[in-house]
Length: 263
Image (cartoon, rainbow, N blue to C red):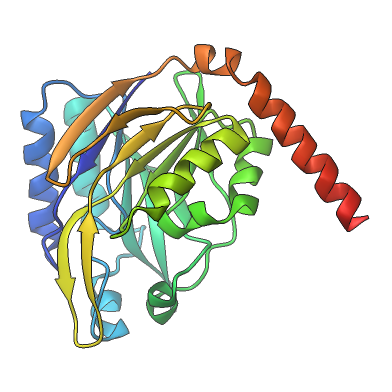
């Protein structure tokens, strides 16, 4: 299995320009994996002066130009794309990761663990999402979700081999937390962060890049720079499973301890 991360600067509030950036980066890449991972809210940016700004940019998944554009890119390169977008569903808005292939939208995951910024704009997601592709089981989590072991353990219980983690963060704490989650749950963790800067009246954000892939034993397999970058990594999921003995025992022990404490 080959997985590609697309670390990019996001053109603020300009969905068309961000789609063009993705097209350009993928067209220029030396090679692409079967799965392509984009950052959180790749099409809009993350920080806004008022919720109405991101709400105006949000799209219904039943009629989304961004989804149609991603479908065209997926068709061109024969890939599955996971990308973070702002979703409108009735009167609610969500920080969502969509799963798109040549046939269109396959599934969606709505961010569960909301930051103080997210809470100003978005409702909370309720469900984890897994999918199978070429014999590999994937799970989806967005940025701050990774900080909560309880969320990622749900994926381990579903037998997830690879966690795909679109993100927008400035500090490096999430990079270290990803190693802990990989070890705890014996799974690969691919983080795709963005780069660039956003400024509002109340807050400014700089995004550090450094997208990475972590093995089920916590070994960094790929680390991007702090610039725009496309990297493709080949992983051997079966070999990763062979090295899961310590991780599986750790997971079982954590479950036993938790049950005893609750009991």
